[in-house]
Every structure is written in structure tokens, then in C-alpha cells.
Length: 355
Image 1 (cartoon, one colour):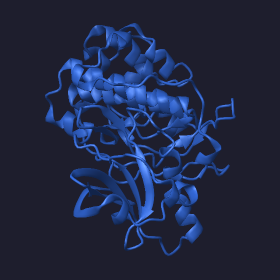
Image 2: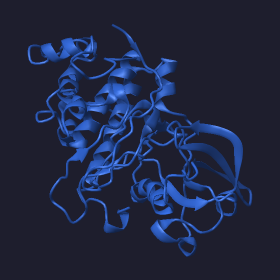
Image 3: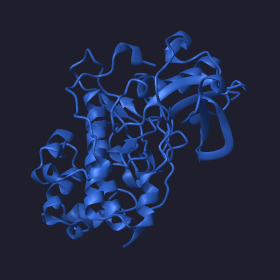
């Protein structure tokens, strides 16, 4: 059964019982990044946000919306510095709802910024600032990625195997970095994977990301709440109250890999009732490459992809295992996509990153 790749809206995650960082739904503008340089320390206010106006710091925003979601729209800002033009993606958040207190509203806006602004990696979209525009709308300024998103590249349908593998390796490099920082994305999908001018893959949209370990902690906290986009959601999220969010990211990365190969989804939803996932679940332990993975090429990739799509999270491959897989290690980042930064040792987010 064929399942076309379509743009998917993210599920909404409910706040966890312990009040940790489980924020509601994926923000708009997943298909677009923003651009970044330095920050002006003298214009920062609480949470790292800037008290200077948007247009003064980052130029005038175009009226055309380049990305749109349930809680924000994304526009392109142009900033002329003498003879040089600099572009930024500006995510303009929704206004405060009538049933929200000012404190609740600001916390929702700053929670994503507090996480994303601490992340600095070649395969992560750089978050520059949180600032208000002239209409007092809160806006998040980001690195601009002119190559669009991976969804558009998949729909175009002309990616060769070396390009697919190169993208896959970069995605895993970014995810491994996130995990080393104690952050799980929880909404990995083609729409949240952007391409910069050089063809580098960059992960964006941390609206439902979760901090599973702070920098001073050794214990990994389990996540709660259903979030993400249905075809990419791991089965344990439907069945368990708590789950390891790192393994949710691993599952979604494998689904993205499948989509890049076949321009279609392996299943609509990872539930036993799904006509494609049900048979996969039954055959998983009986076959080295159960359908639909049996059509993946090269044959050497099937083992690690199967381990990434293990229905049992207790035995699912981790990012560390994937990076050491013999086939994965042979993947070359094609020349136009060179420049991946090495994954640093595990640290976790600093205290300043707490919402």
C-alpha cells in the first residue's frame, strides 16, 4: 500500500505533570530557516531577548509569508549593512489569547528560544534573537536557509543515493549533537529539515523539544505527551505514558530516510491497526528485512534502518550505535555538502537555558 509524502501538522503535546519542558505544538515556518551573525550584548533583556526593535536590528520584513503554522508565521527580513545584504527568517508569534495570562504567554514564547539559542552546530538552524517588532509582536530571528526544506526536495523526486545518504548522515549528526546537549527534538520530519545555500541539512523548529538532561545531571528524564507528526511518531508514544525522547528521534530519522528513497511513507501511523504497520509488526522478529524495508538499497543499510525502526524502544538503536554502524561509517558527505562539525562530548544544557 502506497502512502504519499504530504506536509503534516504536528500533534499538540500536553504539559507534563512535573511541569518540565513539554510545550504545545510545532511552530510555523518549519520549511524556512533564518540567518545569523553576532548578538549585541547591550541590547539583551531577560531570557536573552533583545529590547531593540526588529527593524532597527534586522531590517524590514517582507509582507509575503514564507511559512505558516498554528501559532506563528514566518517572513523574510532584509538588512543592508553598507553594501552587503543580510537575510533573516523572522518567526512572528501569535498574539496572547484572552484566556492566557501575560506570564503564561511569555513563557510559551521564550521556552523554545531558551533551548534553540543555546544550540550551535553546523546541522542546526542558528537562532539569533527574540525581539518585538513595531506592532509589539514577539518575533524569533533565525538563520535563513534559502534551499527550502527536505519535503520539497523529496517531492521533486530526483535525489540520487549518494545525496540521500549524505543528507541522512547530516541529520544524524545534528540529532546526535542535540542528544549530547540533553535535548530531544520530538518532531523530526522533512518539513523541519532545511537546506542552506551550500546544501547543508539543518534541523529547525524546537517548539515541542524536550530537555531530558540538564548539564549537571547524569540521570535521563523520560518525556510525556503525544507530539510530532503522525507518520513519524514512534509506537511507544501512543502506548506509554512516559518514553525516552531520544529513541523517538531515532525512529523519525529512519522514517525520513525511507521517505527520501521512495518518495512515500512506510505507513500512515505506527499502530497495529494500520494496514502497513500491522504486518511489519508481525514480521519484525521473523525477517532480517521485513516489508517495506526489504526494498531498501543498498542491502547493507537494511540492518541499521531495521534497528532504528525497532517497535520495542528497549532494543532500538541509539544515535551512538548508528554512528558506529559499518554501513553508516562508509557514507561520504558529497563535496557540496562538506563541513559537518564533530559531535561534542555529552554535556547537557546550561542552567541559563531553563525556561
